[in-house]
Length: 385
Image (cartoon, rainbow, N blue to C red; front, side, top):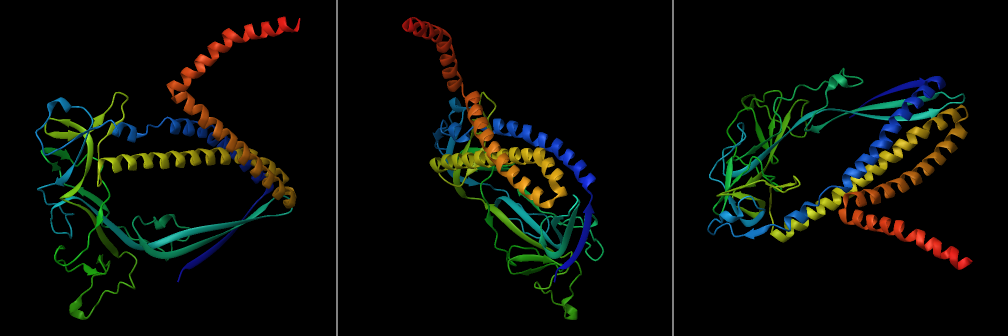
């Protein structure tokens, strides 16, 4: 059952006008920053184009010193002789990498506000604070809650962590697992055979539970996973098994594959659990997705910025709430259209500025205009006579 606390606050008309001026400053920052975000985004490199230039090698054959420092792609089996664990509950085993996820049963504060404008320009805000208990990887600091009393979260004693083997091999090449970007992990199915014996933990439903209050089975105490206490820990693992097959992109140095860096400073050092062709396709898909996410983010920054700049109009009209509502609606539509146009223009201009081919074409057109436009105008004048 969630705890609910409500709070009402009223902000006067004068205070709202002052806040609106502050909104103008924030809006200007967002508006101008959006141009920088959009320009930067259009200049990002599609790393898949670099990956396409990689020399595909067979890592099991003789080493080729002529490839040192150059971008290569190798497909094969990744193995390590090391056994790693998390230093707590998992027995050491032959993993390339291991991820421990620790969740604590803790209080969460959720705030939801509704605002009503009053005749005369003031506004009343009702905020509802809802407190729920749930399994959370990064619990909120309960001292920051609106009502910390009765909703205290203890300090989380065990944190989530990553562990990696120092080295792995693919064919005759060694790979530094500490610096290479690894592929997706698998869920580790927990059992009594792979975890250490510890009286303070309980294995149930695929999780390790560590109650905040010690459970003593000798006294008939049984841990109920359906009724956890605040402060209880729930632990799970994901892993990258030794022996996976996949593709690595990097630069060989002797018998070691390291990070590749091109002449423009772009780097590529990554393992994929798929073939060369599918890995290149995955990188391109990631690039396209990222580009559109940042385009949308830039547009939203511009729209919110313009809305904040123009927001003072709605605040001034708030003396009559009906007029303020109409004003804000119109401002929202207008700023949306303006932001959309500016975003499209910024993207197009950025693409031109980031492309030497487009710049060359524009330069040729500009020079041609300077040379031929006066002659064309002169010929038209002569023709009219």
